[in-house]
Length: 379
Image (cartoon, rainbow, N blue to C red; front, side):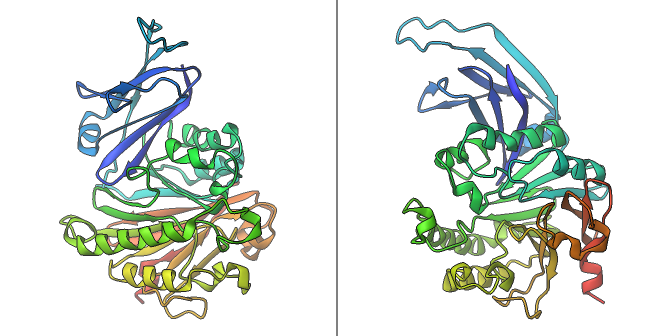
């Protein structure tokens, strides 16, 4: 029935349960006696192998389990279509438990590679939240690339914990790039959004491609500038509604998730072609400065580094640390940290324990160091 396990994406105050099927058919999810159908405009969707339903976080948190239901439909005839037998699979679900430390693992730049990133996540130990921070597919050129997302989430989460997905620049490339939002959590199709998991509030940003829209590499197929302008309006609206967002009662930790470390000089790598959208990113950083962020989690660079406010590498004068937390096996830059010499892949884990927030690296062998903590920053 299913290709892998479902993925429970966290977006806003809802979960979006997405799952791949091996054949065409209709699907729905049952939670706490309620049915949430994969339908649009009065019609059950069937001519697809990816299904997604949205439901209130409170409903799934309270139920602690959900059931995925599917009936095959080989041919969608206009009259008297015949559905296959009802197939179901039940999953447990574990919301964030703030009576103990909250542990989130961050994977970025896996580029359709599954095994070593998953081993790094497994070595980290208990995971309460998985953050996929861009470039999880190598490109979006074939369904196998996009399904690498589910190869990872199935192995790491088993459909039992929340997942936050941020789009990376490589996700923009290939013939299926326009279809990627169907496979991930979005805010009405847009790939930037906020989320709230208990006392943890987060904002997810999409920086788009890493060069100008007119770069010949893209062949006229990207329109990231206009998207970033819409994102600017979204950020302004989040600040306007701060009492419903990062300033809401009960919020005790605030993070930003962005594949691109745009507030830092690292993103430009001192090359003109990567030095883009200066005014837009300066405005974004100013708006983020108003949110009282504890940190921003980034990837893209294929190395491990923390850029702090006031550092020479802080391009946009952010008042929050930017933690670049993914290292890829074949780039050698990862070897600047002795603990990870010889590693295939390094991810990072965010640990929130009371007032203390830290980020620790972890490779597939179980080696890691503390990359950043707010406790050290306050000394």
